[in-house]
Length: 349
Ligand SMILES: [Zn+2]
Image 1 (cartoon, rainbow, N blue to C red):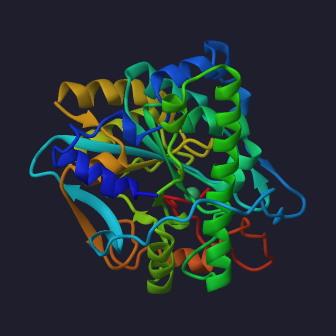
Image 2: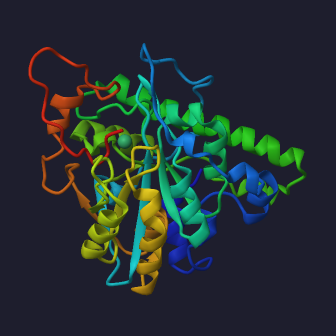
Image 3: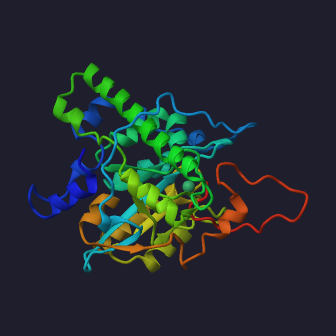
């Protein structure tokens, strides 16, 4: 299978026209045939997260997934942003984190705001999140506006996991996507969609976001061998902070946004004010001449800015999450001693 980013580079080189919907979910015909307006409408209650008594570490129903070619050397490392030579492109990204000891939410307001504005975006979906939200995941992965990347299986901390655990986090998520894609294909055949429409659903995620924005050289090597590009961010909404408001998000983003930025927010119910901020934010970005593209489109449109470490603002600043979250797959337990000071964790659940 061809690598989507490589395909994007070809498209941008002008061989087959500008990079377009082919890089995101299914065709408009397929999306329209699979889901009604009522299907897509989300209840506010879906935003809520629940905590499990015992962590769920069970594997997906099948663990097979398409094998991607190794990542091209030019994309190895932690991609923070893209030098677009001043072209006003921005990639909005939203994480769908779910740890082993929770069932997290689905923030329908985020998705609805993007759809209403026709704004392209990338969702980094946890594999276990996709398993607990199969219909929402299938809607996202067949939506021509959106691209789906991986956010690991149970939000493991790649600063701490051993190689076998890293591989499980990566492979099980690819497998869950493959299973949901197969189910979407079955539904599409049932509805008489053409094979061309069906083939428009991407075969596998080719992008990955490290939980907690945390990595180490061995983790970057695992990802590269798996054919996945590590997508960090250059601009954060700060939405995991419970004090975050729509006004603050709009102000923060508009004060800081530059061409080629990758913005991080959350759509698993852990983004405080994000859905409410988006209508005004998207309108203002458009007014200022910005165009929202998927991460693959952004990478194909310029020169990726790549770091050898994964960090939020300064190199090393996400290492603190090793102490707070350990292997990352469960919430920190209350201890009798002093608890670590709460930090706004950009990619925490
Ligand atoms: Zn996360």
